[in-house]
Amino acid sequence: MKFITVKTRPILPPKDNFYEILNASLPKLKESDVLLITSKVLAIHQGRCIKMGHEINKDKIIIQEAERYIPRSQSPGGWILTIKEHTLIPAAGIDESNGNGYYILWPKNSTNLAKRICIYLKEKFRLENLAVIITDSHTTPLRFGVTGISIGFYGLEPAYDYRGKKDVFGRKLKFTKTNIVDAISAMGVLLMGEGKECTPMVILRDANFIKFTNRTTYKKLVIDPEKDIYSPLYKTFKKK
Picture (tube, rainbow, N blue to C red):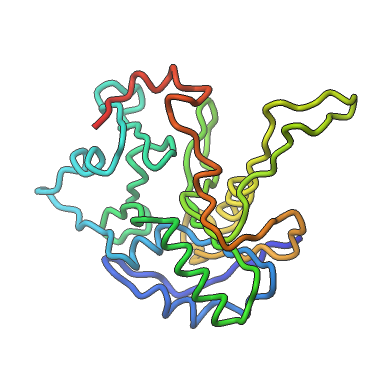
């Protein structure tokens, strides 16, 4: 398989036309490609940008955007730690980098947005199988640095289920699933970069382990916080 980076012009807050950028910069897609898109450019496409200023209270915006949060005063690093759309992430994903004086929020309804883009590109390139993944960078507990994660996707099965299959010694597996969509996202975000690369899209090609679908499969990936193995840690978060 191979990853193909897609360079574009700078995408300009507070609002820009992502479909114009797609048509100008995206090479011809092939059957069974997966297109990864950074969430920031789609947020700008939706106008999900707030101009920085003395009258703007960033903490208030973060809490409004989050589903659960730990206040800044209770965080050793001085961050507001949040849970948003089944993702543990600082500041509800709100970013200032490459924002040109704006706070960039997460796009709304990311999976529906991925579906619309996927259908558009299928029609444009006359494809049967295509998937779109919207990505962002996030931190991993007990690790320095950021890695990529999906925040919405459409067109593929997100996980491979090993349950009921046997391991190398014949033992039947009871719990194991492989998270395909976030593994792909991690590589995509690495190639997109975090600075001035102007590479908001990556194409994954010839990945024969991808199972494509025309159904929305987001709920197959996410876990209810109360049922998650790390649920004891979430008790410190405030619910809105």
